[in-house]
Image 1: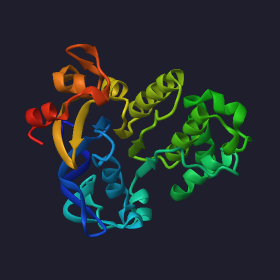
Image 2: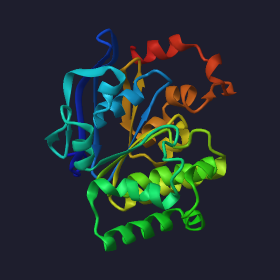
Image 3: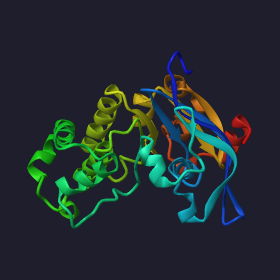
Image 4: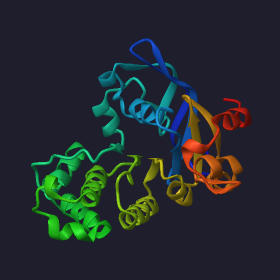
Length: 270
């Protein structure tokens, strides 16, 4: 239980190794409460995407494997299950880079997302309507090939495709990457709407300002370990988070490459 809510996802002491040599995660533990938004922050190479691969069973495709720890979904252990089985247990992922079937239409891409749950004709129509309500612009793109859409529209289709499976847990990997500020604001609002409908969200996002503004809880990964964790509003006010992830240092806005990393390592014990 987390703040009186059931835990939809629980990761305990997770260790992941690639090619039997590279240790990518070192004892990572995190929880996602039912109906909550949890964000996972960290620099490139910190291990964020590896966490998602571990949850969804995609590590073997990257020559990775879990060597220690456990992953459970609603109390059911899933870390040794196949990707198809994990999806069947209510997990959907929107990968970084807007992975779509470029030659298929918007509607066909959405229908592909629903196949795992085998909805009836009426259920399928209802899900289409839900996606159209979340992303009204797609109503006019229903028969357009996904490969010809703008980056923002492709991201909408990618999120919609995942939602067509009616997941209890949605994993989002850098949903704002490469998008215009106006579209980022739209994606932010949609994530909130999705969560209000009862879907738990685990959000990986380099736009820490956006992520912390909507999350209930946050974790910071450094070198494959959880370096900091707590309620999102508390981390948003934390001096180190402001300096290293929100670009707000003692001198005003600061570029990442100007920040001395030893200060973070000293403060966080990493």
